[in-house]
Length: 183
Length: 183
Image (cartoon, rainbow over all chains, first blue to last red):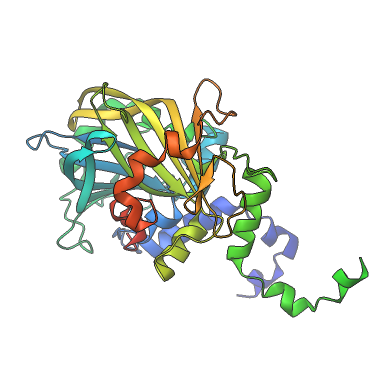
């Protein structure tokens, strides 16, 4: 233990903010066995990356999709072109409402349906765990029990939809204008 | 100048954050004549309130609508049910893209089209100015020149679409789930 106290203060203060983000992610939303928890309050405090709508109720991704991540992850992506270790992407999918508004016939989001969560892992922390691979942790939650990851494993429940995005580290970054421009 | 330095430090520290938000709004995005400027960087640092889509190109509100406000305004609304003085609402409207994704046929946002901005004003700061009334400042910007408010006045270019929301202080708050629930 003594060695911990010999680290110079200046060095401790120089630890970059990104390390803190990964630290928070892997203590708060990922436990030591690799179980991923759905973050709370992301709508109010995280950055909105982008949205899209799948209006066909028979489509696999039916609903209103909103994607959020930590503000620090956006900043780092704008600097480096990569999501840093500890980045959490929350894709919230809600059911659709529709009707005639003053702006015209519109589609909007109603109650929660499911959430997909990805957690960036540069270190291969959980080898052999079916929810971790390709540099990410992957999880799926349903509105009826948002505390339970119902994915059977990322190769079964997540990867197929992401294959076109493999060259972009499995994320459709080109659809997130927040990553490219100040506004 | 001497009087400034006689304000007790404890009192200075007790100035609520909301006062700072209004102060920043009315110095940074609203000049002393009531001219409203389009805020920058709201996507990365402000809270996403909600989105909706108007897919008919002939509709008055055609496009993908994303609405953002300051995190402090959300916190205050959750506490009081009202947007505090200095709240800025940015409604970004972008053109639509569409196509078959792995999730199904989808609609998404492409390049910027226009922005509508509302600025909460509890004090009637700019009486007689055509861009201010009903407790808000109102502005409209186009992508070709986002530094110019092209609205001819809020009664002409803004209010008609907001009449159904008059009982909610002119804002469609029921469509913004972020205002109601932690996530």
